[in-house]
Amino acid sequence: MTAQVPGPSVAGRNNAAKDTTMQHAADYDTGNVFARILRGELPCVPVYEDELTLAFMDIMPQTDGHALVIPKYGAADLFSLPAEYFAATLATTQRVAAAVREAFAAPGIMIAQLNGAAAGQTVFHLHFHILPRFTGVEFRMHARDMADRTVLETHARRIRAALDNA
Ligand code: 5GP
Picture 1 (cartoon, rainbow, N blue to C red):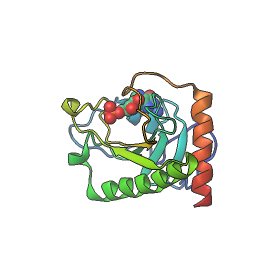
Picture 2: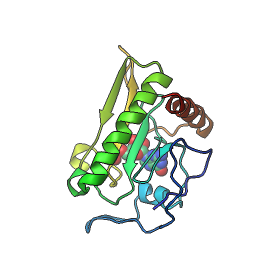
Picture 3: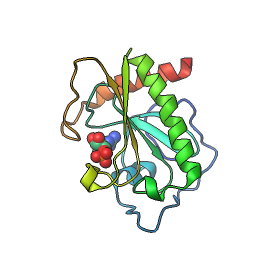
Picture 4: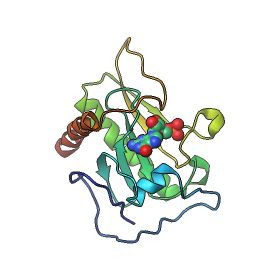
């Protein structure tokens, strides 16, 4: 399937498949925000897309450059994601994390992935957080302050440029 992602063209975007029906696990809630982004019902600020994955900016970033990577498969957590999608999601996480590191000249990159409300998960479609980190700089509260879309666009452009140069 292909997500209908508004915004500028994305490095690696795959427009070949037009199937809008996403496969999902039995216990998956298809109404969550990331499912809606994948269906093109909600906008996002994309940085990378391929046949199996999508990466976009977190709308309430905990650091500048906070990006998310999701599989194009409906799985609430890592326990219900098929291995093929898990491998693809990890590969995209590695690729986008390298671009975030370059774009923000970050000496550290934090990867986070939460499973279950008890672990702090708030959106029940598996995702990896990518956060640039700097010594002595704390990150902001989780999922609290909405960022300005133009700022997210600027950050996404920097990440896409780094992906283009990779
Ligand atoms: P979780 O708590 O599930 O690990 O993380 C969910 C993340 O999704 C949070 O960091 C939150 O800021 C982000 N988020 C929630 N709603 C939206 C949305 O509509 N668009 C985007 N781009 N990010 C979202």
